[in-house]
Image (cartoon, rainbow, N blue to C red):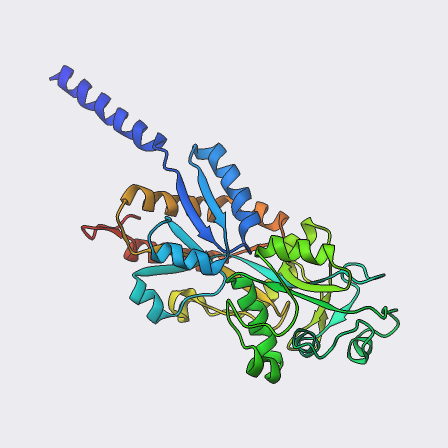
Length: 342
């Protein structure tokens, strides 16, 4: 009897050890907006758990296509999918991190955070109506600032992009003409300028082209030391992009009242081009261990990733929202037999 008990205990211990050390490499693809923080989290998570994350920074449009095609374990998008699309595709959606999209410029004599711009003025730049940096509309927002007689080159995202969605949604809300002629979307028909692929491509183009203006996630602007501008928000205040202004923009969000947590934060208080990055997963996981591994990674990130996110100028979610997300995991992510994975 004692020998059998000992064998059972040994078997149980072995099972627990195997479960603890099980390593599942997971794959994700999508938004370039959160790539810096996902890369940082993945590096730290691998050291803690031995598990690896391979995240392809290909743009929100690509991430949505890949998760629908079931070629990755999760997709990432800065444009939330609506309830009908989530249901039709068998997906769940939850936010992970918040950040800001910022205008970046390469203008002679202009340093980071000095120039002031508004939504209507940027809209007219992207519509091709304002073509010089010393135009009266820009000068009126920047008294005392010497603006050069320099041509403006517009830079935009050439790929399907949640960053573009946030940018065009903000401009559409502040300019009726922009809304009518270009509109909001992950991929729109621009009327002027040159395209760059990913936040990386836009950042590189703005750095290379004198007189350029583009839009990138704030971490890219800081990391590449590109001059960014202040923006006028809905309250009529000029604000700088930083953690405080991102948090202010997100403070009034009603996550639980929106299907799939799909809150859009543009043109509010705080920084007016703030947005969340969302994760998309299949509700029914063909490989339960990999599905569970995805949830374990983001659970780890919610518990351990705030400091790393803050260092890269992202904002993590309030604890109450994280609790709601974990509850969705419990009720919505299952294996083929209907058994919950969380």
